[in-house]
Length: 282
Ligand SMILES: [Fe+2]
Image 1: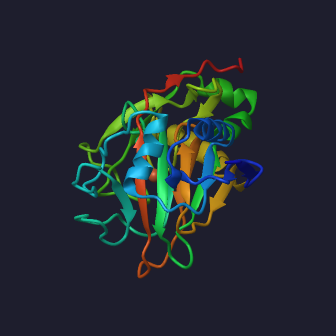
Image 2: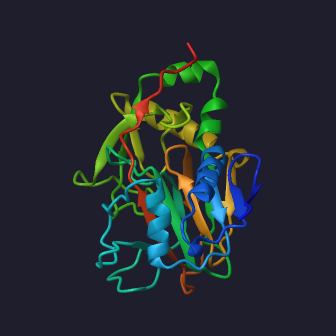
Image 3: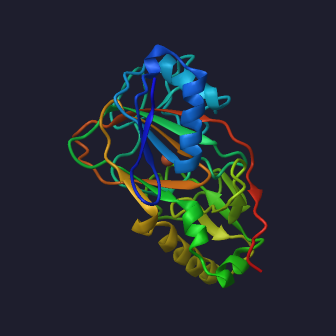
């Protein structure tokens, strides 16, 4: 197998062709996939025809799977898949909310966010439901030294209230919603690079900071993270397998017509608690 790697934007993302994951997991191929993922943060492997078992084998090459912790939208069978779906599929009991979803990182409201998220596209609407990915290394690097110094030592409380704010943050979160305070700037465990680790949907406030000051600071940083210059927008095709680094990227979903089906099978790789970065600016 000869893999070809094509970058999808200046900021983030690469498309890998020449791979057939149904023919089994080949260690040499997976090492190339891993390297492409570390260098491009999001990889798209198009044209796959993956069974659930194939997807599990691909996922577990990177490490143990993270069990679904957030929602009830889970296949109750032994495979424990979560479907990102707006219609019932494969024994699901309920569906996920539709429409636009703000930028976030998966499970940042737990001490141990998932390391990677993998989605396999099964049904895709004719228009919309795209996934925007942002490069959080680049966002951090674009800050000036004064801002980098200001962020040193700060933590943000990340909260996800699935009932009140599942896709757009509009309301106060319930005190029962899962939450965890992570450093605003973390050090990526594999690359050692600094990353801006906050997001609009889930980062509620800076710990210990006055609310108005916190809101203003977070909004300024969200604007940097969401700058189109740091993003790539993926238009899905059924058969796409997409994997993103959940520590150095953010993702968001664009609106789509709720009368159309959108079904993606999701698996995640378990991660560790991210460490704070020692800011290089001083
Ligand atoms: Fe997500």
